[in-house]
Every structure is written in C-alpha cells, then in structure tokens.
Image (cartoon, rainbow, N blue to C red; front, side, top):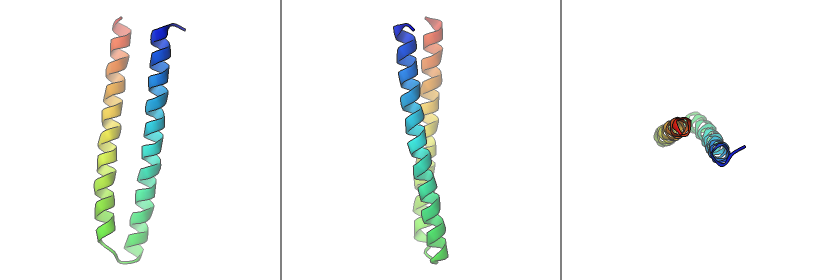
Length: 76
C-alpha cells in the first residue's frame, strides 16, 4: 500500500467515525424531542430540529470533501 492509499484510508476512517458520532447525536436529539413532546414542551423539538439540520449540513460537507479528495487521488 503506498502513501496516498494510506492517507486516503485514514481520512475515510476518520470521516466515517465523525459521521457515526453525528448519527448518534442526531438519534439523541430525536429521543430528547420525543420526550419533550410527551411532556408538552414545544421549545426543545425546535432546537433539536435546528441542531439536527446543522449536523446534516456538516455530514453533507464531509461527504463532499471526501468525494473531492477521492477525485484528486484518482487524477494523480
């Protein structure tokens, strides 16, 4: 395995770990929202939705970065 492949593998692994953490946080936000709705609290689901959208955008940015990195590695 050459150095570029090693860097690509490390980058992909790190991004996959970040996406996994983001997914767990989004599931936690969903659970907090459901709990708040059952307690008749309307504020928490709104903030959780905003946080979830922000995490979605972060994940989308990471995915775009990964595609660009892969394209650059294939061109070399």
